[in-house]
Structures are given as C-alpha cells and as structure tokens.
Image (cartoon, rainbow, N blue to C red; front, side, top):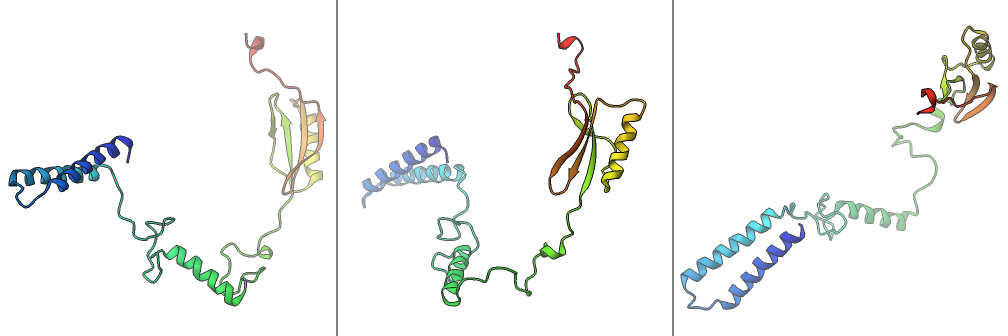
Length: 189
C-alpha cells in the first residue's frame, strides 16, 4: 500500500469514527445512509490497495506458510524447527559424517563421483586474446606435437601456449611472444 492510499484510507476511517461518535438513538435514516456510503467507500479503498490474502498463520516470519494446527503460532515451518531442537535436547546432536543409509543423497557420495580428468589445452594468440586451437588432448606429449606441427605450418600464429587443466588451469609452456594488436586500421583515427 503506497502513501497516497494510506492517506485516503486514514481519512475515510477517521470520518467513520466521527460518524460513530455522533450516533444516537434518534439518528435520522438519511444520516445512516451517509454512514453506509462512507463505510462502502472505506471498504473500496481497502480493496483497491491490493492487500493480499489474510495471513494463514500467526507467525511473523512465515505469515502465508504451511499451517500446523497443533503449533501455538500455527506455523509448520517454525514448529518443525522447534521439534528438531527438542529432539536434539533428548537425543543429543545429529551425528556428523555419512548420511544414514535409509536416506541416500540424490547426488551420491564422494566415492561414486568420477575422478577429475586432466587435459592439455593447446591455445594460440590471435592478437587480442588466447583462443583454443584444436581439441583438448588427454596426453601432454600429443598436445606438444600438435603445437609443433602448427608452428611449422603455412600460417603460424604469433604465439602458442599449452595449458594444463586439472581442477584448475596452469600455463605449462609458451612459444613466441604475445603482442596486443589493434584491430582498427590507422590506430582508431
């Protein structure tokens, strides 16, 4: 609800309060019709304000969360947290380490995952940045032979390098000197 809507609603409710104070046993019907119209106007302002659904729980943290009728604040999420804390008081903290066999992890255990694979990436300097040239190799000697063949080829690049990929990247060897080349003719004039 924005500030203007709050202001209009406040005025309408104050007007209704004045009507309530002025009511007596001999209030004319025309005045009651005016009270009814002001009451409708206040309800319309409240409907237009875009107020969401009424909170399902009495929890400040999860007002529209799942409901647990047995919980004092009717919040299932907070009650689950409280129950876990009570269990920990009686049973002690949950055991650390492997998950119980009754509830396996959907991602598997460390032994189930394949070992990281190492690769050697041949790269060339294109005048602006290093770019992959050829497919990554599983054998370092094969990658070095591939780069040697490229250097002897008809159109060798300014520089080549061999990058070792194994959980991280490490530059093993560089052939040539990479120099940044401006791709615009006449130096961007």
